[in-house]
Image 1 (cartoon, rainbow, N blue to C red):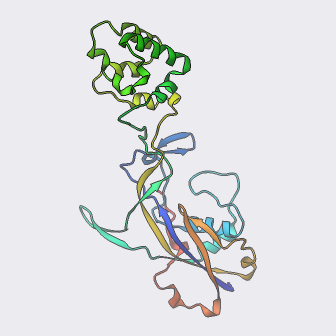
Image 2 (cartoon, rainbow, N blue to C red; image 1 turned 45 degrees about the vertical axis):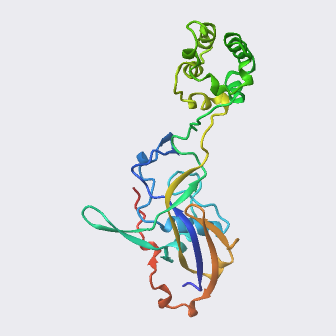
Image 3 (cartoon, helix red, strand yellow; image 1 turned 60 degrees about the vertical axis):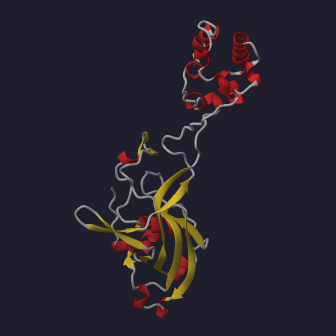
Length: 286
């Protein structure tokens, strides 16, 4: 018999729903693979016993157990049982979406910033500067390139914008840049050759090179459900004494905080209106 009810309120818990259109990659056992190809990497239900149990593990000073990868330590069964006997209410607004054959109720989606690059995150700038070209070549080859280009064109080329050299080979008489092109070919600088010989150049051929620090877009965006709600956990006095902190996270970055500890005699069934028994929530994965 439980002595108290542990009331926890959570907010802004980000739920990333599996999207069949995503081209994102994730780290799994055996290496990287497309997120869409990851088998059993999501729960069908938004929040299950497993996430609540992990949150409670943290509140009690224990290590949470990942749901989608293997670890060498087991979960604390008593904590898992406390979570299973609790109740969950999600109060995030929903909407009805019409599908081809039926209607589906789903949480409202919002756009969030991701602290990771998009799958194709190479920056594609419209211009490029000399300091990046120097990084791309390295000091020794860069000096040779500047010397040969300056000799061919008749002035110190790096005194003006590098963009002035776009398609320059085709703007001057044949053979003027043969020595430069030979030098670039011998040193495997095909992106520079393309820049000098094409009217429209893909500058990212240069900027995504590791020597130029691999210019990437370091932030991404995605659609996500921000979930908020309440959790009620029947708990014994002896387990209350195990609580080490009053807040933890749930899902991705959601803040879960202890609101109050209610005496069992002051808690009524009417307080559970709109709640689901956590142990009855499906743990099926897809």
